[in-house]
Image 1: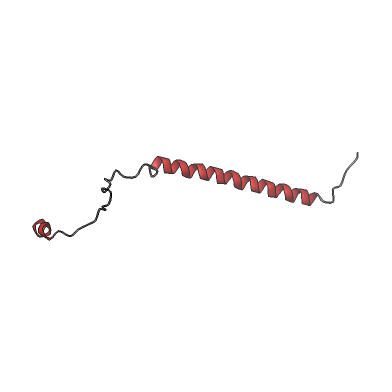
Image 2: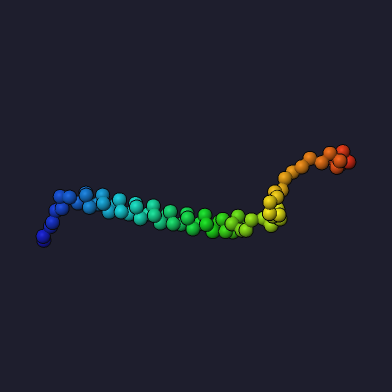
Length: 74
């Protein structure tokens, strides 16, 4: 029976282990990426902005203190 001894077999095993680890990390990354994306889509965080009315051109909405109504609200 013919037997072959590979003196650098540890190097091949090390490279295979490193490649396997890299592939495992990449697959884990993809699974987490798609799980997070689906979670965001299901939670409806990516929907359109609220239907807040826009201010007319040249104006902006602002909170203004109204003393007249403040006394009657208490």
